[in-house]
Image (tube, rainbow, N blue to C red):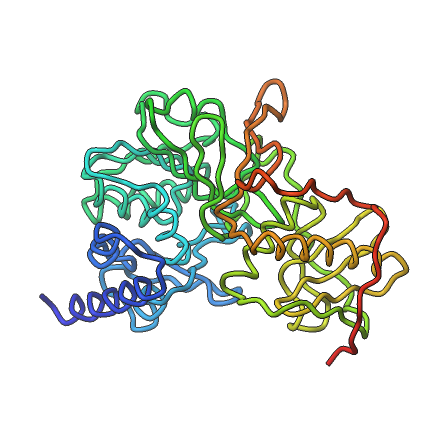
Length: 389
């Protein structure tokens, strides 16, 4: 073992230990894969701001090792560079959640939609011991990924094309893993899925792309996450996330404090299931307001949902929207603060006739006694307010 090997393996083991302590990794197979398959050897360059820094995977710099074995995503392509599309090595915690949700086992055949750097496919191949089929839309990224996989002697077939069509010549597949945000499932994937197989995909919901497990005609949320959105028919009908909003008004509405890493995320997904205006937003000129927001494009009203308060933006319609949101939160608390994993939806056909997709119809809690969702625009009840800090 060289000094370089020792350096990355020590860092990789520390990353795995951290992810296990946080509950992101639960199985020995995933822990062993992430500690064994070197992430840095799948990166040939990364962005530090707007500057792309080329690297030599087999001779990693200290900075590359620091980035590769930290729990952070690494941007490797921007739309402005030759790849023509953004691409990253996803945050290891998010990848661990996806692999855990897939419940991979030796002997399984897997199709991956979105090749990225190839590290995720390499992890899958390590766990299953079988060749993986990966579909990548960008010719530049596909070529880089093939080279990285070959350099690391990993059995993955990278096909360049529209992931919507899958890989009919390589199936059937026991699992299909999607590494880009989508609005719905391609019927081609369902046709290429083996009996009893499942799909793990980030479905557009609440301005983000939480992970869902799809079996037959049902989708169930399994983990909070966000991914870069797909293009083309796979994203048809998805409402883009709001990006920037005016700063909130000078008054806020208190709510019982939530854990930003757990119950706040559960509430976000619940709100999105009960009010389609729920999205992800940030306020101009401040870093204090970024995350869940409810935005009504017809009235320009909006309210930021923070872990301990609601913050309406200025405007006559925003207080009423905040009151409606406050009632949804009260209902969620009365139901026992159900986690996002209790939300599921039947899939319905949508999209264009030539490129249909199967998208969630209406997310609902498992509890059969859940009150009916309140409709946007219903009469509002007064809520207390406190001065903003």
